[in-house]
Length: 462
Ligand code: FAD
Image (cartoon, rainbow, N blue to C red; front, side, top):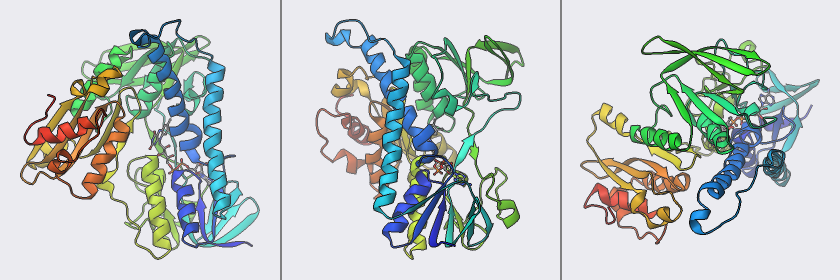
């Protein structure tokens, strides 16, 4: 019976990062993964393949819509879907292989198979039982569906199926205007599908700043995505030609149908803990099926911890990674910590959307006095050069102290720009600190500085 200081169950961003940090800190570490490859949802069927398809189709969009404006003439490329899928597979392979390399480098044992926990301190895979001082569950999540809909990964697909469709559908219905629905909806709209997004709520990307929600919906509509808002999907019927969705409008109660070749169900994800034996062990769960943990990722069973999508908090790869580092440090006797107030969220559409900290709506509700510094990318020379003048940086700061409370960006490279504000917030910076920092010209980041200037004495290029 092999024994370890730490056994991690699941090799997604939470689990693999936890294992690497634990090994770096001297713990004898093994990772058990049921999938054939390392990297979990994120690398195999999530963040990475979706970004590969977004990158490829963004380039197609540029060729079709913007190349000629720059004097780059000639026919726009045609789509070889099989080759685009091969490119996506290659990107995934390079990344999952990279984790395998890191495991070898850090002397982490990779045990292949599905794990269960027969008792605290023991992990079972097939006929083998392993012992460990500590067990970290990083089993992740799976796509959620709706009553009345059966995901068959052919006509009615989850995000996993949508990343590998046999062919580009002429009509794609997307249920759910969240991050995954909008990213994959954008991919297929750029590939020529007629994309209709049906959303239960009245606004897209629930929870985001209202200004961003409205602007993103307007821009995506211009890009050809259609939206049916405030509509509850009742059921889907499937035949050889595709699917028909029956939905009800929340306000009027009116019913209608939508026909599509493919339906993407993007209504969220739920924690995946099947087969671990948590109920028999008496591990406490939340009402939403997440593993319940304390502030140090400990479950109510001694020696068993949990992180990532399987516990509460935003279902994001970087949140899972940070928790992986924190728990490894805690188990090695250090003070691991995650600042949940400063976890950025990004949507990789064009333009990108990124935000961190409080939304204006949340500040209004809390009654905290705040000020807004907003700067349009129309005043940013670099953004105009790449046809991305639409969008803005909206910086929120405390009215009295000027301390930065949040930022909401829609525009070019928003997913990178947001980190300047993450660092500023970690250091408790004021808007004036950003405003007084020299930003290189011409960069998109000048828009962040201008928003900071707009918080106080005024932006220059507005
Ligand atoms: P996972 O990545 O889900 O990994 C869990 C692993 O555990 C899996 O490989 C599973 O096989 C394994 N496992 C489960 N049970 C067992 C068991 N009993 N025995 C052995 N192995 C087991 N997040 C972002 O931050 N940015 C993005 O751009 C982004 N894009 C996304 C796009 C899509 C289409 C999807 C679906 C998700 C996206 N996400 C994104 C979310 C991100 O993928 C997840 O938040 C992240 O993968 C969670 O990491 P995790 O380690 O908790 O779990």
